Structures are given as C-alpha cells and as structure tokens.
Length: 271
Image (tube, rainbow, N blue to C red; front, side, top):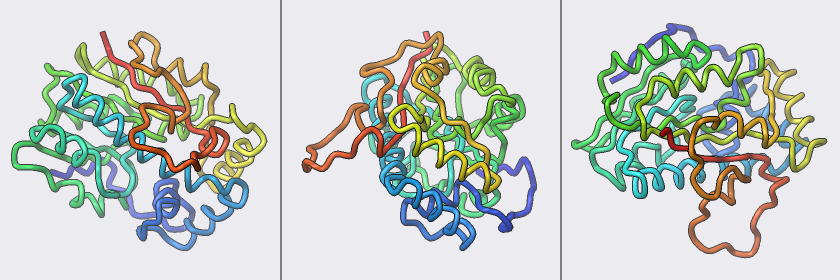
C-alpha cells in the first residue's frame, strides 16, 4: 500500500540528504549533485561512510532486540530513506513473520522506489506513506488511515538519523512527544542522532557543509539527545555511541572510534 500525501515533484537542482546517504552506503539511487555534496562532506570527515554503515547496523540490532526481547510486532519508521536491503520489515519479519511496518518519508524519490518496501511476508503487512515529520498530526492521521498498525498494541517508533535534520525552530522535542503520545503503553522509541561531542571541529564543519548545501542540520549533545527520551525507560546500555549499542558478533580489531562515527543511539520503552 502506498499513500501520497505531498504530491511534490522530484527536485534534482540541489542535493538531498537521503540521496547523499544512499551514496555513502554505496547505493545507485542518487544524482551527480548528491555525489558532489557527499564528497565535500567526506572530505571534511572521511569517516562519514562508516557513520552511514553503523547507522544502518544499529537499526538492524534495535529492531531485533525489540522483537526478540520486548515482543514488539509493529513499527512506524519515519525518515525511511531510499530502500536498502535488508529493510526494517525484513529484519523484523526474520524474527516474527507477522510483523507490520509503516514507512514514512517526504522525499518523492523514496515514493518512486516504495514498491521495494512492499515485499512483506504473507503473515505480516507493510505500507508506505508520503508525509513530513514536521507535521506530526497529518503524518499520524495518514498512518491511521493506512489501517496497517493496531494502535491498541505496542508500536516501535523508528527515528534513525532523522531528528538532526529538524532544527530548533521546528521544535523537534514537541514533534517526538506528539508522535509518542499517539502510541500505547509498551511502545518504543528507537533513534540515533549525530553529535559533535566526540570531535566538535569536524562535526561542526560537516554541519556547515550540509546547511550551506540547502539541508539545514543541528547536531546535538548527549544531554540534548537524552531529552528526546524523557518519560521513557531506557534499555541497556542507555544512550551511547552507535556501534556500542548492543554490538553483535566478533570484531576484527579495527573497531571505529566514537569520533569517527559521531552518532548517539538509544532505545526507550513507554510505560
């Protein structure tokens, strides 16, 4: 199921964060202008390719933990980005065949590739809606209209690498509170967020590059990221650098540093 909310044309006149992220992951769904902007950011911080991979890996681990240890069977993934397998529903349905996922994004290019997001198990369901997180009321109305998620049962809200694109004038904390208020007790918030804490000079330079290319960002400190989880019970290990959140599998001795990744992650449960 695909629902168009915004009806906008694809803008290829300036770089887009989702298409830059696709380039960082080694994908093919981006344009030359996105590649050029991504290379400028990578010149300022070569580790940004590692950041993108670790962001994706955190989503996989958090999804499995919520499914296996907390019994979550439903996800709302906002800021989906261009589909890269395995997608969230594939990870969730590898644990629970009946898992349901609604994806939401405001990039028309994601809509173009939304059919990739529809390959659910027969027991589960997936849907894609085009909506903007800065209008959470309209977004949640569209989610409800899709009739994929049961709002009487816990839902995991997935906000990976999204909220640093929501600057203070949009009141990002109010947006997250509004989204969580729509979800029942037992629901979860899984998110990661870029931070300058580990390497202020480099990450402030990256922020300037994104903002000057037409994509404003606001990287936040540990205490500011912790504020998104107010009222939730953080599960172990709390908020930490992305690759340190429930790592699975052996390392080869070349583990990236916190400064390379610059991404804080956490998962909280609504009580």
